[in-house]
Image (cartoon, rainbow, N blue to C red; front, side, top):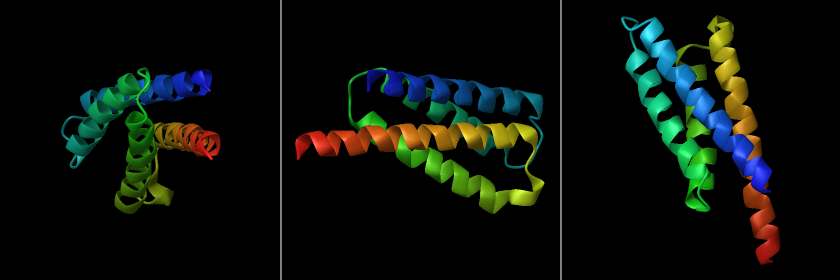
Length: 110
């Protein structure tokens, strides 16, 4: 389970770096400040996942879900670029990893 946690942490850190890089690539786009904010939040959650706290797993589950919903509402599924598709794919993998960690923790407590 530690490896899954490290995979989720690494993917969130990579996603955070990609979000920040996307901001610097197109700084004049409308709504790009949200991308920068999510990049910083994802990087911070990725670093928190490296520590043995359970709240970071909850954050790793909640914020990618919010990010996916925000992208699909704002941009729409038909107008996604390859970079946004990559970021959405990373979010989905992180959600699955964090959900797995939470489900196994609940099973161990029962």
